[in-house]
Image 1 (cartoon, rainbow, N blue to C red):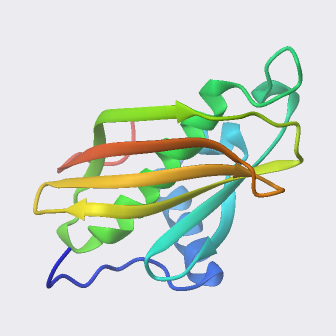
Image 2 (image 1 turned 90 degrees about the vertical axis):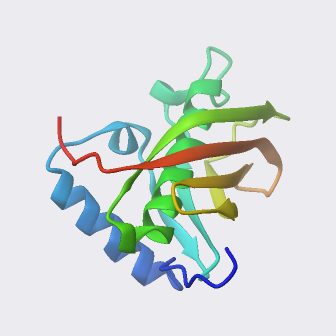
Length: 154
């Protein structure tokens, strides 16, 4: 995003504080809590969230379900877009997504890492890769988010 300074967390501590503040402001548990997502890393250009493998998130064979991988990818992309566009006080709503499921795993956790591919005044395109604890790529996704004036809550 040429000429724009993004407010993306530069450290794990910053990301954890951001996620905690957002969760408190939202006021109820959502899918991020269901998936067990926790901050994993941040470097000023990308963020990542970690998801533990739990029975509720697994297929019958004990590997991650596609729905869980999609959820981790979308929520990580949403948190990144929220930070990148924090100054606009808009909430990113996914309007298009593309996923490629490349492998699967029974690893202890998976990490969804997101970065902004392209941004503008009302639209952001975010790329998310989900890898297992051993670094094996499980999924690659892109999301197009439209920035909306939508308020938090039900």
